Length: 241
Image (cartoon, rainbow, N blue to C red):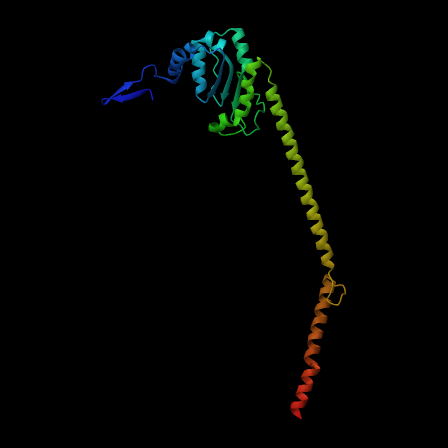
């Protein structure tokens, strides 16, 4: 909010007519007097615009105290008039973690990127600070040793490639296992297609064999009707006598 209601009247909040103005006010009134020698800054979403405003207004103080800067799916704004040294500081101390479906730390290689851009490890904007935090901690740890390399990102990318290769290997094994199971099932079905009769003889499943089997079954049925079982004949004989 840039204004509040006082006695029924809406009054503007001092030095809060915009988020950039408010951020600059906080920097001037609280951050600069604190005397911190090193600052580690995370800017999420529109916070990048606030950082850009601070850079523009307080260039010398910003670049002399901010040792690491992490943007999370944010607006990366580089002010006009910065020196070559300040530009170099931005390039070596800044990482932008962008919402992406790619694994955390994978280089995105955007052509118009103003700094190193990598995947935040999550496609949703609101989660990017949390999901990129494991790498942000490693980035900020560089401030203790003045390390300007991006080895922590190279390690993350190597781990992501290894995990992807392992997943591919598992997927290939599963596909091979499914293929073997299907082949085994087909072989079983082929063997059962030859089948056996109750007497142990082979059943011919061809068209001619099926017709022959049906004929034999019909003949057996007719014979049973013509010649009843012996027990039935005995009972009929006793009744007649």
